[in-house]
Amino acid sequence: MTDLDTHDPLGSYRDRFVGTDSDLVYLDGNSLGRPLRATGERLRTFVEQEWGARLIRGWDESWFLLPEVVGDEIGRVCLGAAPGQTVVGDSTTVLLYKAMRAAVALRPGRTEIVVDRDNFPTDRYVADGVARECGLTLRWVDVDTSAGVTAELLAEAVGEQTALVVLSHVAYRSAWLADVPALTRIAHDAGALVLWDLSHSVGSVPTQLDAWEVDLAVGCTYKYLNGGPGAPAFVYVAERHLTGDVPLTQPVQGWMGALDPFLMGPSYAPAAGIRRMLSGTPPVVGMLALQDMLALLDEVGMDAVRAKSVGLTEHAITVAAELLPDTVLASPREAAWRGGHVTLNHPLMREATAALWRRDVIPDYRDPDGLRLGLSPLSTSYDEVERGLQAVREVLDALA
Ligand SMILES: Cc1ncc(COP(=O)(O)O)c(C=O)c1O
Ligand SMILES: Nc1c(O)cccc1C(=O)C[C@H](N)C(=O)O
Image 1 (tube, helix red, strand yellow):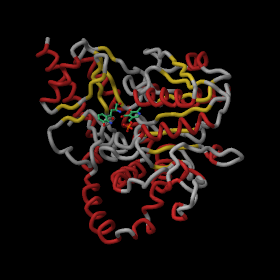
Image 2 (cartoon, rainbow, N blue to C red; image 1 turned 135 degrees about the vertical axis):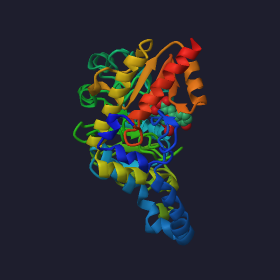
Image 3 (cartoon, rainbow, N blue to C red; image 1 turned 135 degrees about the horizontal axis):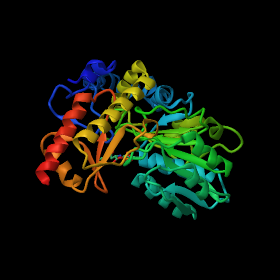
Image 4 (cartoon, rainbow, N blue to C red; image 1 turned 30 degrees about the horizontal axis):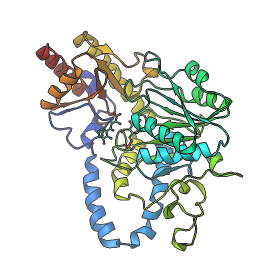
């Protein structure tokens, strides 16, 4: 344990996660978060007392409304979103599709979707598919690797033909943190809507979606929300797009997003409010672990979580500067512009990552040459960061 752990006000929360008592060094919390110990018990109780005992009655008793209940919790604890605008549904990819289609339909006559070249593959692929399906064209923003998506770059790309801008709050490789309010305003000034992907920020970097006048957002829940592999994603739609003369509609018109699912009528009419973003039966089991983590984040508070996240990434950068002067920092040096991970480049990082995994040190590798350290604020210790970076030094030396 380092002094930093001894004085860490959030240090004791680490014990609440499965596996933190082993020697394994886990630095991949932004691909898959560790499970909470409480979740094991919760899953068992759910099988015995809810699914097993309540059976189909469970839908009326609580499961039917769970996507909205958990959505509102994500909104309140992490997003700065008032109730009624966030719902938990399908995978991030599917929600991106539904949200993009819904957004471009709100801007009829406009011909372009703007997306940055450094955005996560699924965001780019879905934008490409939606553009083709709707007869639109994609306009790419070339990202400055030393500044992320800047106001200047976005202002050059948007115009009177832009229907939608698709951006990520935290860039999945570099961790560049976008200036959401400023970029949203630029899109709005051009009359366009903006869809933010919060996958790499939710549960680590707080947002104020309502105050920032964001239109739509999606995010995944298996990273810093510790929902478990394949846990369902969430979508946020600002209330102004859910009400009024032309409320938003999405293309996967399933019965669970319909006005009255059990009427089972001849045709689809969308539910009022955010529930219209749903399509099929909600993944109830997939929301249990997520609820546990939301309760913990609520207890700790997102500002304290962000402070620890900054502490961890700052420490990783300081230690890497001492131990790994042959690597290049591919993430912002300034904490205000950095999300919850740190990427270090070196020509041998692909081989180094494989060697690290063999010795139970688990970071991620992302092209080109990037060792990505995803530091989950409540389950990662400062000591774990140091042990991980020491192991990187040793494997790079062995490979040289
Ligand atoms: C920015 C971003 N968007 C989306 C996804 C994933 O989407 P899905 O959960 O549908 O695989 C990820 C990670 O996998 C991601 O990092
Ligand atoms: N979702 C993942 C998966 O199913 C397998 C491996 C990794 C992932 C990830 O989450 C990758 C992650 N979104 C990234 O930023 O690279």
